[in-house]
Image 1: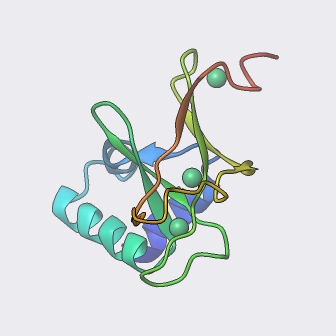
Image 2: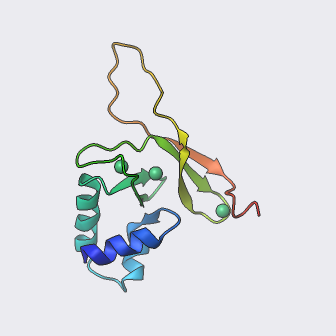
Length: 119
Ligand SMILES: [Zn+2]
Ligand SMILES: [Zn+2]
Ligand SMILES: [Zn+2]
């Protein structure tokens, strides 16, 4: 199941939700799928993207390792095709917070029209 899920994720050009994966595998066990995704996330293979009502998952770049994600890039949601893509070229890791604040997580989310829909 893990290998199948990973294969599926590797084939995607956009981020996918749990339901997308579930539908693809003809309604396989949701709990198993969810656990698989959580394991992948922990291992630094995939990262989650929080959208309004759903969580989507996308593969990580090589820099991520177990327990340490470095996905400080922009996530772009296309209002036309409703897909979310990782824009790794938009590096947002340089963001600084005042010295008496400690940063644990950064989330970036942009909305607009993607390159495919722009033709
Ligand atoms: Zn990551
Ligand atoms: Zn689009
Ligand atoms: Zn991403």
